[in-house]
Image 1 (cartoon, rainbow, N blue to C red):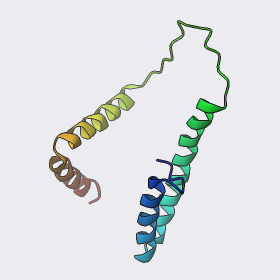
Image 2 (image 1 turned 120 degrees about the horizontal axis):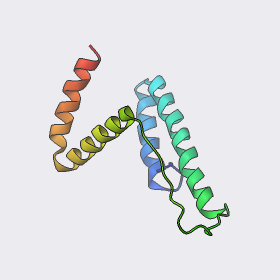
Image 3 (image 1 turned 180 degrees about the horizontal axis):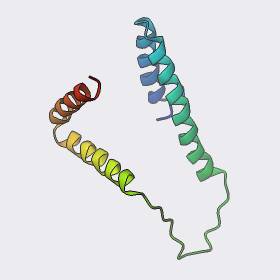
Image 4 (image 1 turned 135 degrees about the horizontal axis):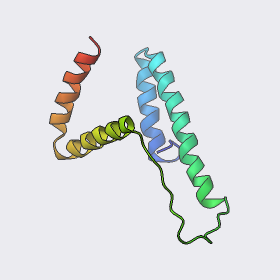
Length: 106
């Protein structure tokens, strides 16, 4: 997922960036590279935490909690529904996304 060179994610990102550069979409290629760098930072951070950081498991009843405000909860719910619907019927989600993008970017 982070696009490390010998793995498949690297070749997928490389082909997308290569196509963008060939079509003179340098701004979009820059955005893809920048977002890949940010994503790689977060993915590799989890790998570092899992394999090299020491963590004490002495507290058996400690739970990790987080809270979301109402707006974040609604956004999370909407995106979750879109992801579930996409697996059921990708065509419907693509049609709604196209219609929604026409209303947003007019």
